[in-house]
Length: 181
Image 1: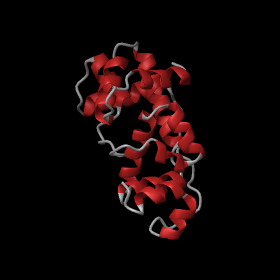
Image 2: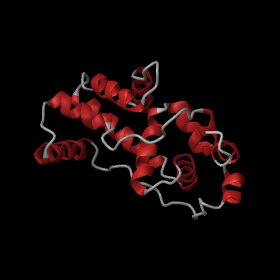
Image 3: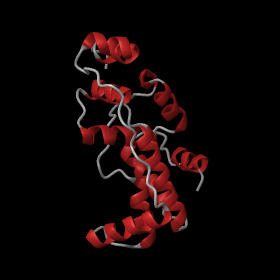
Image 4: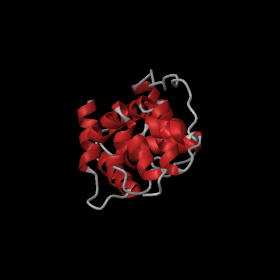
C-alpha cells in the first residue's frame, strides 16, 4: 500500500456525521477486507504519520484545545489528527494554528482506536490476547523491520503561558483561551 492509498482509505471510511471512533471502526472493517501485507503497510503508514506529528507545536495545540495533554493524550490527539485526512494533517504539520479550521468537538480518541491493528485481528481471526498481539508485532516487524521513529522535540515552551500561546497559536488561542469553544 502506498502513502496516497493510505490516505485514500482514511478518506473513504469517513462517516457523514463525524465521530472519530465510528470512523476508526469503519476504517478497520474496510481494511480487514485487504490482503494482510496491505494491512501491515497501512499500520506502517499510520505509525509514520503519528511520528511525523510528534512535534512540540502540535503538542501545544493539543494542550490548549484539551485543557491539558499528557503523553498518552498527545498520542490520542495525533491519532485523531491522522483520521482528519491528508489535507488537514499536512496543514497542521505546516502550521498547527490551522486546526482552528477543523476542530468541531472532541480532539482525543480512545486508546483502542488503532484501525490497522483492529483490521489485522479481524482479517486473521486471531484473538486479542498476549499471543495475538505478539503475532501481530512479529508480522509487522517482518514486513517493516525499521519502524518509524519519533523525532526529538523542539525546544519546550510553556503551554500555560497565555501570552506565548497567543503568539504561537493566535487563532486557537482566540477560540480556546477566550472561551469561544
